[in-house]
Image 1 (cartoon, rainbow, N blue to C red):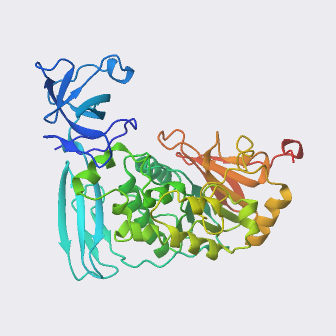
Image 2 (cartoon, rainbow, N blue to C red; image 1 turned 90 degrees about the horizontal axis):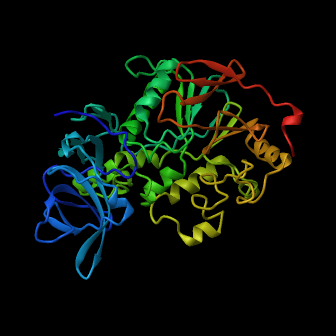
Image 3 (tube, helix red, strand yellow; image 1 turned 30 degrees about the vertical axis):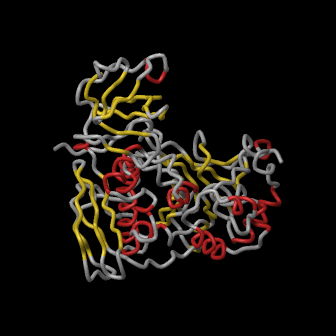
Length: 447
């Protein structure tokens, strides 16, 4: 069978190759188009059930009638017990092309189930007597083996002596583009192994959602963490809003592939990243605010309101780790920053006040004095953020204390990172080309 992953529009959903598949997501069916029901005008048979299809609906009228056996996604609503389609999306490929995983789901202290989707089918293997450091072989073509760590320690947040740093953000499941960028900059070798010695790689949040290789990307990052540590370097994964959303069950932005695979596995997508999963435990051990070299890294922004709480990095990180998980968007947490660091608008996963186009909605543009106070609290010279897309990596609003690094990662030509080497700052692209970040003049920055 062919093996591939999918770079598809978000409205496309993978389907079961042989029969009707009820989705875990309400009023959505993923199945095989069979025929137009001759006895019921306007009805399409999908997965053995009839759906009334009104060609006057724009999302349906422009759809070419699928061929028998073609996979489709149907959004529908019930009216008097009859399914009425509101949207139909022909897909054009089968479940046998879908790959996902592995997921290691813990049953108790030393036994777990390994679940992998290969060619659309679910493969489960049971493992007992597991200990930290054990290696489990998997049937995945991309992640052939994983190293077990059932109780990962919280990662350290303060690395002031780092001399070489590459930082990226908002990878959103684009594993191949990320690996190409790392190869182009000498961070990994041709086999994808760590090759940057004592350098530090920072992933500034939103590694998950949208893309179609999220699971494989997470395992790649875990592998790079181990390789970097052996060489005297480090990989730092800073949590962003999309990590917290996935762990809380807000699944609006997952790639359609994962709607299929979670249904096939029989677990919700957030459960596959929950506290009983290997990946979920690892994510819950990551930080949301770190200092690496002269930089304070936070996914969205460090607001003056957060600074006003007087918390250290470890206090912020511990509070966020304790709150990861459902429910998403709790009203009380959104109302009180101190108890709602994950979901509050002024919290580190969401704050956009550094950017002029968003400042009014996020409490106004912070003053230079407020930014200086944040940096002084944490012993840093710059705050580096993702979350808000920028045209190119560089100073935010002409202010050297603030650096934005969120660029698109779907296209390797657009991928870029922030490099700190020899005391100098550069933008770097996937070919390893360096462009110095020149300090803006006083006339470029308006208080």
